Image (cartoon, rainbow, N blue to C red; front, side):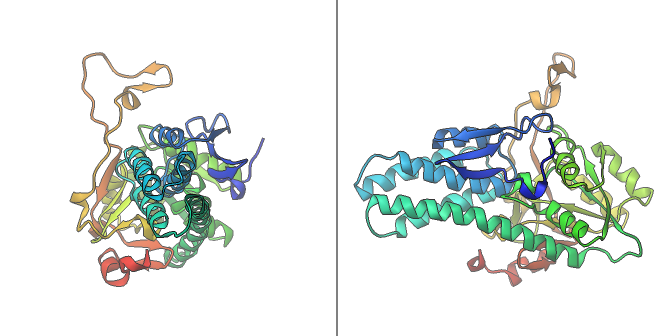
Length: 353
């Protein structure tokens, strides 16, 4: 059965619970997981049932509400103490994606600033989680349109390369990097997308390719180490990737392999764009050396399905992200427009977030 990507929303409030597309089962199975408790949401984030920085933020916001709903007290002080515990649980799931912490902080701030009874606070928390969800879709659509304005002007239609998945599945809908792709496709400026398979979890091959197929966008999957060859052959006009955290100077953490892709793009004089919402910018971090990098389990490297790829006795190193220095990034595309990386701190104040 074909599902239009315009209707793919990975995090949905439905029947008094949260429905998550189980991204660990794509592309073979399009299935949902129903989340009723904050503990289950934390587990879903940790196990990457829901993944992608903006989508994690939306899921965490709903997780905060689910946790608030479980707190059985009418005492405001006791309620807020319990809510802090829920926040701690959700914060511990994924260390790199700043949208997670941004959404949790916004929910906590809402709780502390809301007057009235505990039930009043719970209702406002629910409304805030829904607002975060809706705002993210609108943000991604704006990112897509601002990205369209800075893509190279070519006599032929564009061929874009992307890494990992920064599409509807990684956000509340539409996508960041794939939002730019969608806007280019909508305006008939796109010829084809090249999708890095993105080892070790294959988000490009499994998720980005799946999204493109649903929408009829021509997509070619390549292994990560083929990007330089494709650029050398003149097959790529620009690279567009997402981000999990951006430091104040423009250094950007994204899925492992992004840094090497940026180096290769620079060597071939191909523009390299980062597409991300303002909530991904962490103005508290001066540069990328301060971004925490999540390390994941070794079986992601040595095992695909039931197949073991490596001999016994070897060691593994599995960082989930790397940091691309700002000087390798052509522009950072946000819902407020596209900026040179060194303009972020000057052009965008934290008050805009």
